[in-house]
Image (cartoon, rainbow, N blue to C red; front, side):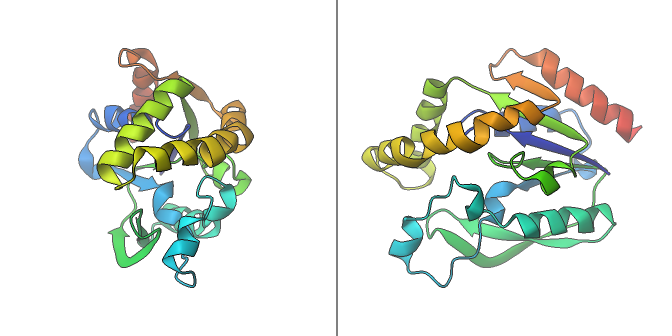
Length: 202
């Protein structure tokens, strides 16, 4: 199994890169695991308490479970991925039954910040985007998809997102094998990644 880690700041375009890579590959042979599914279970907290959690800090992520799940997949076993709700700031009762594939793509802002997880990746990718561009994308997404208002998004960006990015995310670029500058015309880096995958698949 080839495990690819795709990191980068919020709104950097990681999802776009994932789709660009997957478009060229057989659907049955590639799976995706999102770090967002692995936020810790906070059922013991009230909604108001959960809303105050700093979700951009590594301690918000259940890395132990994510590492365990990847090890299980690598060993040929199926897993039940958790499902997380950004509306309730908590895990739901649902899970996603996931079976091993030839290629597993793991994407998330903090996946290169955890040494044990990082060691599981055969290819480490960092998607880089200008901070203004990332803020604009984050604004659009959180308002459209997560029911936030502009003040809430901007406040969160200034108080947690930006400092967390500088402290925990940007430094992990040093661990990347490939850095992809995010623009729509960056086909060379995507082609390199696809070539690596295709070589492994064949």
